[in-house]
Structure formats: structure tokens, C-alpha cells
Length: 418
Image 1 (tube, one colour):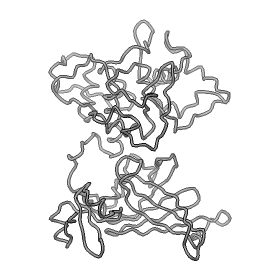
Image 2 (image 1 turned 180 degrees about the vertical axis):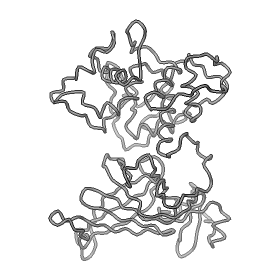
Image 3 (image 1 turned 120 degrees about the vertical axis):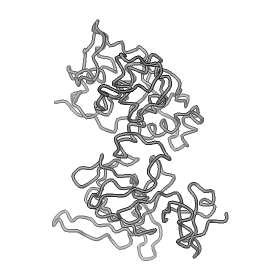
Image 4 (image 1 turned 90 degrees about the vertical axis):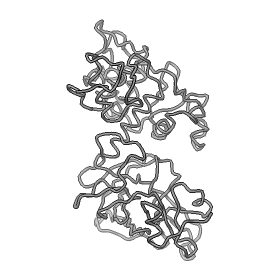
């Protein structure tokens, strides 16, 4: 009997005869963990993949984003999550023969399972001499072809125009590069593509990040920040997608094991109720006396971007409500069609806990949070995005969104003077 490895297996861009070393303190800011990406153009992409456990750094706390990547390393990160869901080793750790010896130079090495699965699925074919050449550096054309095939993106058929000056009309890689270009997955969208140039760790991280963001958004292409529509009209009766920050009124259910939380947002306030399920009767039970539940938007979570934080607090001394111990659930603010199972969205939070979210209701319009407003010391105050005044005022996550300062002013809010 073969077993399935955990889907939370950590993948790495650094794969060689010597394993990547874990960094000493994962609680440090990312700039200190991987200090050489601080000013790199692919910093955001690397941060996201690093926080998702898809890539790691070297033992000296570097990522080396401009280093090249070889064919075996690339396949490990592109196929790793899929390998985690197949039966490829038995209960004693013996590899399944289907995932060994698939090329003349791929036998029982660490990368064999990734390469052999990719071949088995038809994503790669190797060279005419029967080899795969795992240690060979990957050029940009080869890397993009692998990415497009493995992600299930259809190559572009009969493209009418080529956006790159250095790409010939009969180049073998055109369908893959055009497909990636049309979906916004490439750093360079015009000019010279440089197909024969070696792919770097930073550049492949950027393309992988854009694929992830495209899937999360539910769109058929990656949209850069600042290019999204300013107002998103949601079709009636369709509860997905939803942005929990930008949608001003909604109700969701968050399920965890035998209990669920009802979270409601009405304009700029939250209400949270929690219920458990009686194992014997299957009936709903209300929480114990002394429990408290609250929710807010969290700007500084380990998740990518804004998160909705739901806290479940248990008080040791329930009558005087002291000595609280709180558990936190983090939800991504974007819940999209890509994650829907039936009427619910399934996701894994930043510590690996699985949750199911059901959208019960929502408003028909979403408003971009260009301006965030709250009641502060009895006054209606608003802040522009990432304003230092938010920190000075002790700004917390419950607020109302406005598309512009003028909108906030029309509703009686004034700008913070700090």
C-alpha cells in the first residue's frame, strides 16, 4: 500500500545534493530572513512564495534571485504540490516504480519522482537521445513551456501578432510564450524576450506568483495593482467572488471541525457569533459563558495582503472576564470561484489549518478601500491607504471603505490631522 505525502510539504527553489537549511527565526521580517531581496524587483513575488512554503532560501539567509535554475530544480517547484497528492512511496518509504527510471539520466535521485510524474502526465518529453539532462540550466523559453503545460493553460493557437522583436514567427516556443504574455505572466511584455537566456530564480518566482494571483482573483489573466476596476458590480444571486474588505455588508459562516462561526459585517462594524455541534444529537449548541468572539481586518498578518482576523477568546475567570486565552483564525479577504466546493470556499490558513467558508449574503457593490474611515474618540476620521496617521491614532481593523477622500467627506468624515 502506497501512501500520500502531506499536501503541506515545503517546496524549495534550492535543490541540490546538499539540502536547503531552515532559517533560524521565521518570526523575523522577510527582509532579515532573505536580506538580498530587499531592493530586488521580484521582492513581492518571492515574499509571497516564501510565506506559502513554496520556496526557501540558502543557509546564509540569502535567496540569490539572480542565480540560474536547472531543469530538476524547476520541476520540483512546478510539480511539488501535485506530487504531494499521489501515492508514490509505500508505508516504508520505498518509491513506487512508476516514478523511477523514466529517462536514461533519471533513476532514483531526489528529483526522480518530480521528473517522472511530469513525464507520466505528458508535461515533458525529454531529449531525442532519451535523456532529461536534470543539471542543465533552463532557458526562458523552456521554463515558460513547462509552466504553461503544468498549470494547464492552453497554448495560443495561430497568434496574429508577436509582441517581441527578437522572436521569429516560426519559433517552436511561440504558442507558450504568447499564452503567458496574454495572461500577464511575464515580466517583459514587449521588446526583446531573450528566449535563450537562462531563467533566474527571481524571474520564475515572479511568473509563479502571477499564476497564483490570477487563480485567486478568478480572472483569466494577472492584473497588476492599480489596474483593477475602481468599482466592482456583483451580479445578483452570485455569492462569489467576494472581497470581505471592500464589500460593505455581508454574512459568512466559517466552519472548523464541529463548530462554526457566523460573522456579519454591516457597514463599518462586525458581529461574531459562534456555535458548536452536539456530537450525540447533531443539534447546535451556543458557546460557554465566559467566551468572547470578535473580528477585525488585520494589516500585518503572515498572509499575503489584508486578512480578516476572527478571535475566539476563553476567559479563565468567566465572571470577571480576566486572564483570556485567544485563538485566531485568519481568512483571506478575497474568496473567489477558484476555491469554491459546492457553495463553500475551502482554504488553508497561514498555520496549515483547513477551514470551509460559506457566503450567506453580501451587498451588490464593492468599494475599493482607497480611504479607510473609523470613529475615533467620538469623531468621524478617515485615512488614506497606509497613512502614518493610522499608526499614530492606534488604528485597528474595523472601518468603512470609501473610493475617494471626497466620498468620505460627503459622509461627514474628516482627514486625520496627524
